[in-house]
Length: 219
Ligand SMILES: [Mg+2]
Image (tube, rainbow, N blue to C red):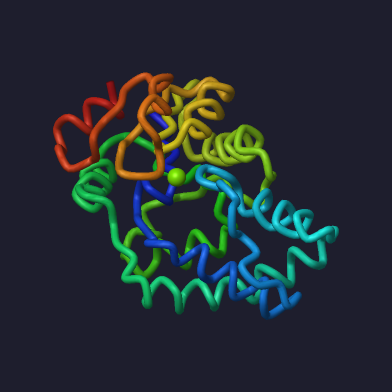
């Protein structure tokens, strides 16, 4: 049995900037900050890293209450922005999830998104219900820690000794995946620069070749 932990942005789906747009609107609405994310490189970063870091850039602290208020405003903005930006699945994702759901695997998420943001991104694309659980930005700002939290949760759905595979699109996914003892399959559909994915165990152009993807994941 294998536990699969999928990253969302650039791996399962492309939000075409909807997350950034929705966050920018939320920063403006809550704190009057314009263009809060300008100049930040947050590919592969967690939402709980991005929000406090953007506030720190403005010389502000981020309390637990600030973060909770942010999520409450951000999730509805995100729903609107995903429609505006025409978010979509990455190539081959739906047939792959359908095929994996017939295999003895535990399908999970390993994403820096807030859990509610993950659902807002995946439910309209019809794939939220494939995943039994996961690790989310809410669990920890650090990607290794949030993947570890997710893996612990997913182990409750899997056999003892199940191996873990992390699927992602950035060097952060690779580093964190290896840090929790997972094999890492990287895809080039997202936000990597040449060379970023060299540390992955396998690199795929995308997930559109079903046989190649299945054997990379279930080797
Ligand atoms: Mg990603």
